[in-house]
Length: 78
Image: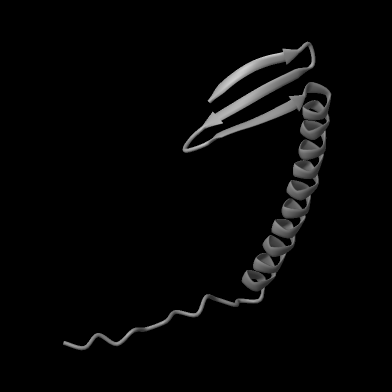
C-alpha cells in the first residue's frame, strides 16, 4: 500500500494488487466517520451489556429455583 499527501486535508491510498486502486480521502470526512462509528460502537456495546444483564438475571433466577442444566448422555457403542 502506498500513501500520498494530496493536499493539506486529503490522503491518497494506492493499493496495488493485480490492478491499481486509488482512493482519495478527505480528513474531515474520516474524522466524522470515526465519530459516527465510535458512537455506534458505544450504543451497540451498551445494548449487549443490557442483554447480558438480563440473561444473568434469568440464570440467577434458575439457580434460585433449583433449575439445573440438562446433561445429555451419549451412548457409547463398541
